[in-house]
Amino acid sequence: MEDCIFCKIIKGEIPSEKVWEDDNILAFKDINPAAPIHILVIPKKHIPTLMDLKPEDNELISKIMQTIKQIAKEQGFAENGFRLIANCGPDSGQEVMHIHFHVLAGKKMGPKMIG
Ligand code: AMP
Ligand code: ZN
Image 1: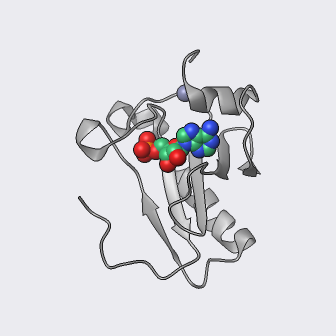
Image 2: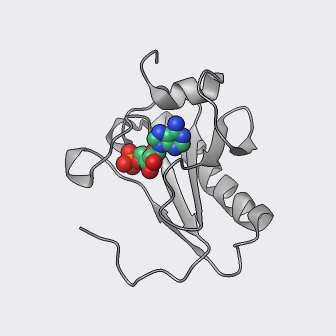
């Protein structure tokens, strides 16, 4: 998608600090981290929101979850844990209309980050 900032990151038109890349998935550091470790994990396929997911995307989403596990091991926060957030739609405050999973780690988080 031409105007999508994450598609531009995938194409290398906007720089990013990559932590994972394969044929279908990219993970990179959030530019405005909300925790000591803040990684965004995205599919290379442009899907605007979680509401746009189709049954044929099930394998892709499953691969993203396995990739998050792998990143947690490689980046050293598997044991201490992490928080996974996915915003969807206006009420969530989703700013970038290309689905992404926020992986937050590296500190003990408050009991809630909701609302
Ligand atoms: P959301 O509010 O869930 O749509 O989150 C979008 C996230 O993308 C925010 O946490 C931003 O800090 C992050 N972000 C926006 N532009 C960039 C960029 N060029 N590189 C890395 N992260 C970005
Ligand atoms: Zn996109």
